[in-house]
Image (tube, rainbow over all chains, first blue to last red; front, side, top):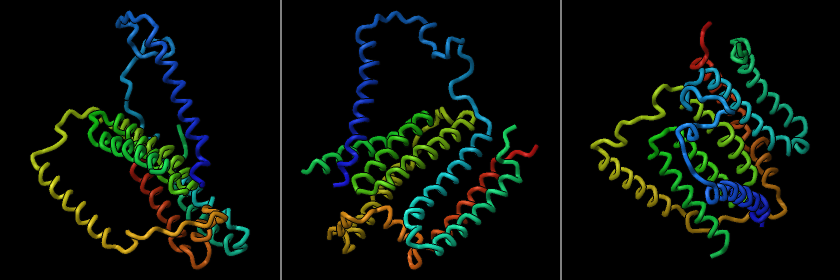
Length: 119
Length: 169
């Protein structure tokens, strides 16, 4: 059964969750708690925290994330194709050239528009 | 019950609970984090269905990319992350009746479908699911045209994203 091949991943999840729970739980159980407003501040590498935790981000992050998703999906399409490429031979290659050349149009557009630049 | 069924029920309960939290959380960032749990539950369903490639794609694309995009999108907004408005209006009962009707109708249609009762044929143990997917996708006579059209869809999304988010200097 192929499902049980994933058992190591499940064990890994249980162990990592358990380790995190132990690490936090032991401190919670045995550590003394004398909270002061200073101690309850979020830890920011020793600096005084400034601004809200969810501050507004520039729209460029959104653009980069969308570009990342698109090329991510492209790679997902590559994998099943690559597995059967040897059987398909030249036909498979032509199919992928068509697929990629359409995407290259979008890539050139993004490049020329300056969407890949981060000033 | 087989162990597989027990795992399915546990994961289904967690996924449904997280899905309810997605729509009921007041803090949008929390809703996005619950959404990641939902997407992970779906990945486990793919694993239960022996679709390892889809499980990996689910984790890489939905959790690794789309959930991050959603968190970015929430952070682009000024105040929406902590909306204090009412979560439902006076028409909630009409919506509940309508959804119940829709659910009943869909269940009725599905239960009349002949494939609903019969068990699907198990895949050959020797066959590689990823190989079969590749053959179905790109072999001539498979879903070649939808495969190529997918690239047009990707380009359209790319141009759309640039049009929406690109700022003129």
